[in-house]
Image (cartoon, rainbow, N blue to C red; front, side):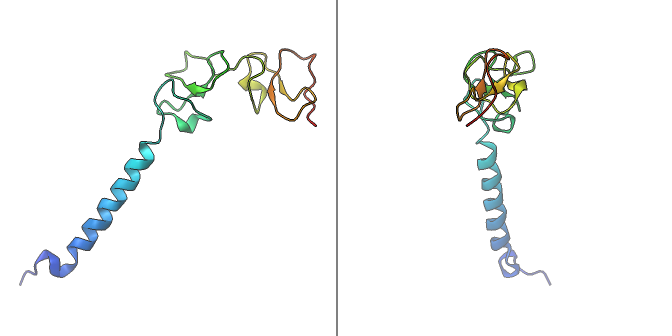
Length: 107
């Protein structure tokens, strides 16, 4: 004897599956396209966030566009700066400093 799908609770399973698909879709839609503002690689569909030598972090299309940022752009490590020198210059916020004559010291 074959029971109807509703008698087996099939509707509940379908509702849960649909909810899961919607959640996955909404997470994927949060990824930013090329040239949109970003704060890290995981924000971008290209998985590449950087300044392309400028002062604004955006999703970069590919590795031909450099991630490094220009002087006075917020940073967390030397590798994010075209000068390869990230620090506070005696202040409280880390930025890309022009050269090693600017102290990395933060207050």
